[in-house]
Image 1 (cartoon, rainbow over the protein chains, first blue to last red):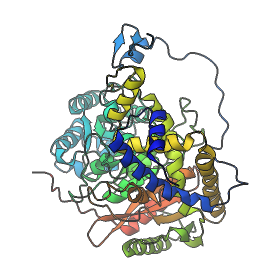
Image 2 (image 1 turned 180 degrees about the vertical axis):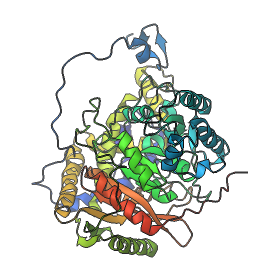
Image 3 (image 1 turned 45 degrees about the vertical axis):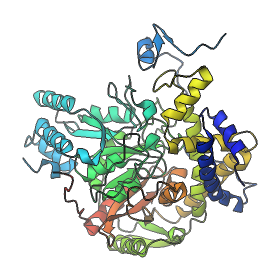
Image 4 (image 1 turned 90 degrees about the vertical axis):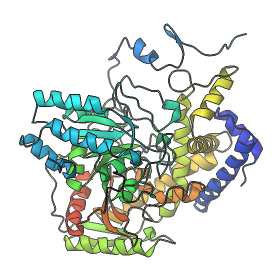
Length: 95
Length: 485
């Protein structure tokens, strides 16, 4: 198994992290050594094993559908890097 | 009283309750000690002036029935604290000031404790040495060249150096137990679902747990009693009957069956660790426990499983950092460019690496081969523990495969860094409680820890075993205050 630069570019696009050539090469090296280590799992036969999604063996509790906190606008907007009154501001998306 | 900082949490609580000490005296002592200890870099954000004010207010109208009356405490910077910056050790949250409080820290303040500041940690808790923090590495009070472990490295350093009487960390794959082991302190990773995850910056949601880090087992039990509550704000919080861990603590562990898993004898494990483990077995026998050999056959597959599951969950959790709603933003030519630059400049190398791994194992065409496979192996690992617990009450292992390593020693080799968590990761994958207690020193004089793993919800039992063994071990930390000029 080998992760090439093309794959790195693809993952970088999916994860919205920009990488230049130098960084891509470093990441390819790192990821390949990590996946060499991960490949060990292929030694195990798991065809009839149920996947474990949560260790908490309880069913989710139901709760009544009621609003418990309101008027949080100021709190929600407080940490935004850029805002205009009640809105988050982003670069123009419609030409 | 010049010896305030040398007192354990339990002693401080007793002295404040007995009016021999005031909260102001205690808080002042720890603040002064913290101020003289900047070189350790244990704090990211200090809140000393507020702490001293709160202590004064506490003394004016003190409620001595509380469990942590006027006790000052610094906490890992992964817990959201209302109106005090919370960074998770990352540039991307450098200016983030939460408008709400995590349930675990709220529980602590409700019992009368006072926040002193926020402690350094690996970025988003991803690391085993505290070297991935945007705010720089932390020094181990044992020796200036050593890492304090990670990710709760600021926490372990601060407790060992007595900058705070006690603290809390978080543990996703060993981040409480490994730093505790590296600094000669006690660290408990509770059962998954025991402590609420509400308000803790998320790393890997099916693994993350908060827990106490302390100078001794009794203090650890007391804090666990405070932080473990059912919380409807965390859908994975479990509603079970919690013990009064400190009140029910006992050294009587006669007849307890303790398992020794043969698979934890890993290749290349230093003889000192093997010897420590043997000594631990003898201590447990001296306490009246019965030792039973057991097998956890899939132990070797735990780390590869973890390095699929944890990054996969992290890549999803960290998708929220887009530069729009909060946190750091880099300017871009358009929206996508802004996202990509923000995340590329805002996250450090290890976090980016893990997001990439996680994105890859969840991506189209690879999901079954990696993520689903890992979930299946995770089931096998949990089955191993379920089988073992038919025969034993708890399991005894070393906490780490080595003592603390040197700063910079493993930063260029991610896999060798990951191997540090070989004994702690299986416990998170199975959702079990585990505690690390200091048990001896290696030839260099660095502390070594032993881990006791319990059944789910059986914190009381492993605390009792740790409490009994602690007395026999009689560990003394060699700390010389070298950082105080």
